[in-house]
Length: 238
Image 1 (spheres, rainbow, N blue to C red):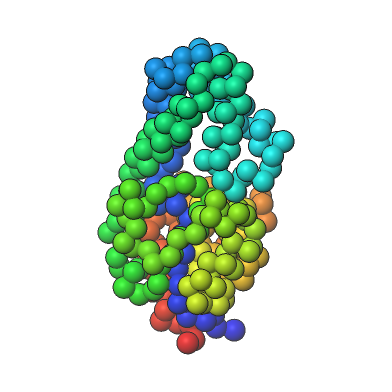
Image 2 (image 1 turned 60 degrees about the vertical axis):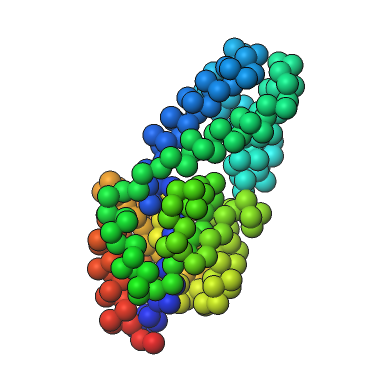
């Protein structure tokens, strides 16, 4: 059976549009330096790595916080401020500092040339579990709709966040394609909601074979994604 021609193309952000690991590492280093200046008790008692351990421990106790990683960071920080006696008035300043540094992302080289071409063919949207601010980053004009897990209250791979985004855009899930780098969160999550899913596999991983996941397409670059989308537009039924 010929697939339906897609009407909407939705994206994950971190590690799909830009690499996030080095950005978070630099943000946490800068964040800890900020804490050393404004909350020296916290910085002296906890390294950046130890603060990360505290966040993971809090997440184990409060798994619902997976939907809002900023709130997880804020609440874990409040715990250590209370333990060290530093002024909790600095918590929001620390969060603002981290947000600035976390948004210093650099898109993969193939992303910005291809997005306008895709934008001319399909309606583009975003579904993310992260806290990237596309307006701050300067890429919001490419996407007509954005939904984050912190807004929705549930995180990928929950199929409801995918269905909610499709409903908001006025397209049926079977008329939407989702693109992301994570097999479980992005590919399985989207497919379970009825969308087609493209695995953005920039590093040649074969993890999908071991995981038993069958993406609708596997692309190493946005150029390959563009070719696949063009094929879907030409050979699908309306």
